[in-house]
Image (cartoon, rainbow, N blue to C red; front, side, top):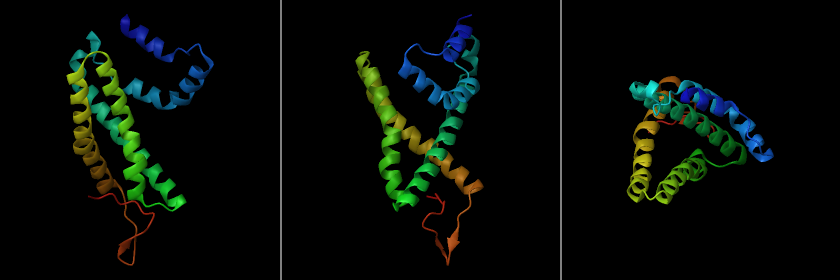
Length: 159
C-alpha cells in the first residue's frame, strides 16, 4: 500500500511551474532509475538490498560513462584536453551531490554520518565506479591511434 503511494507520488506532477519544468526535464533520467532499482526501505524489498546496491552501481557506471563521453566531446570541441575536462568539470559534477548529502546529514544532527559520507562516497567512486568504468571501456571501447599515439579526441581511458 505504502509502496504504491510512493510510485504514484513519483509519477505525479508537482504543483509549481518551475517544479513542473524541472520534473519534466529530469523525468527521462529518473523514470528508468526509479523503475529498475528496488526501494529496499520498504518491507517488500528488504531482502533485495543486494539488487538495490547492484542496480545503483550499474546506473552509476552508465551515468559516469555518459558524463565522461559528453565531457570529452565538449572538451574536444572547445580545444581542452580530456584530462583537463575530467579534473575540473567532471570532479565538480561528482562532488556536489556528495557535498549536498553531507550537508543534509549534518543539518539532521548526524555529524559522524556527514564525515563518513564525505570519505566513503569518494572511496566508493574511485575504487568501484571508476574501476567498473575502466573495465567497461577496456573491454567494449576502442582506442583510435594515429602513428602509434592516441588521437587528441580519441576515447581511451585505460589507467
